[in-house]
Length: 624
Ligand code: ASP
Image 1: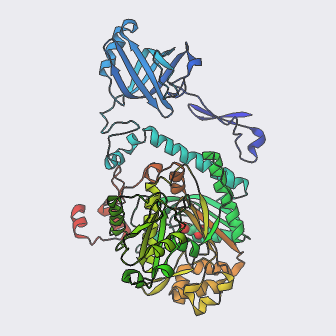
Image 2: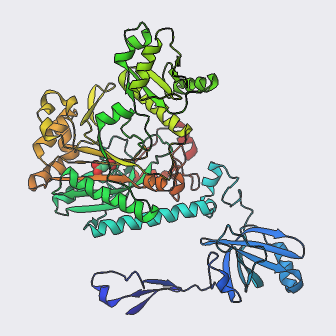
Image 3: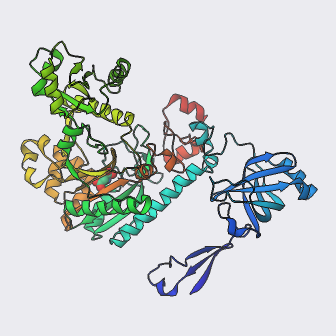
């Protein structure tokens, strides 16, 4: 074994036997020599009592009781309590304490002693340090918000001072989770024979359905790079090149409106495999997901069920159903139409869910549900309810049109028992399903059926290849234009493209679309046909995707892949909906980085170099 000096305070031990594989022995690998400190703030326990230690960190809190002063010292690893007793602390040192403030960086040396009143809430809670020497390593302004687990800082302020926000333990834990998961992904895929290969960021547009971010070229004025919406075309080219198992944990860029689980730049676990069927891809990434759940969360999950897109829409009104709970859709057209209730009679679909145990809902609760579905973002016109009373009778909001027998038939179809509540919507099929999906999720939340500690993954398969866009009067690729139609539907590509199903799949966990992929087209003629269906002229297809179609002339293997949203996956494992606190430096709702103030204007010289002129009145003013 040799020791390579790495930096002035760390050493990397490399095991010679592994050198030819460029592998560092993980057991011995890295040992950091701590220079200014002997231990971290998360490390000391009762077995360290009576040792002299030096800790470095930030002052989280000072409690000054006159003759007794305590300081909570924080670093990445935890918090340790420092103790100063006036009676046995040097006068000079004791006075120095009064000049300290929150977030000062200090070095404290002293003896580890047992605490009189222990704190069972922190791992170092049994001990404290009786400090004999203290050095201020750096002062700090008073931070603009408290750096505690529950901070008083609003989102915008926390983003502006993200480096302070990142000192808080919840964020520190989120980033650790992210780190652990990326290691687990890499380990798993490495064992499965995948190569991690980087692909360029300065490329030309990839059609993933969003707007591109573009970068002007200085050397080729008037021309622009586009940042990749994903490495889709490159990973397919890698398959043509023979790298039959590729992955990359990679940034992707999409200029679209932001939501809690969207950022203009986000990270994917991007993968591609050659000589595989859809089942092979699903098996591999089901294995990876299962490995992550076990390794990181200690959770075992069964084989992931597969549900067709059509089934998912019919049973849950969503292509990303949350199957942690039931409340499946029950279609009531046959039972509810033709009884004189015009709203139902004129509807394409009458569909309900059974909310278990909600049969005693009050007027107020029912009104609140009606208000919920009538919110503009949901858009239902109204809500019909049927209460299944304890005595076996039914009470509904449409009693005028339906007798007890009718309502009983609905309840039976929905599997509703006494004490349950049926909630029914009607209207156009697609819109009504979407609305009832929202109501179902809302009821799931209300009834506590969406436990973030429970993980229920599934594959949604057999997506349509295309979707019709009313605005542009054209088909759009539902996934992307490289997705292969199902063999048995190939003929329909000419006769009835809207009916073609794709070899495309999504991984869904707890109602979140974690990833999606497909088996690709690897035949030049089929790819050409696909571009035609999507409304590209031959010349347009050639100029945008000629490089891929040319590559297909040189022996493209059958291939397919998937990409998982890494930020979403980490947030899901962390039990949260928003991905923002699982990204070290995220953008705000308006796509801004408020810490570095970006986007921002650039100097006129930069514009000149790029051969660009701005034509935006107020920006131009700013410039001058
Ligand atoms: N490139 C696709 C995406 O970003 C994933 C894939 O088809 O592999 O959604």
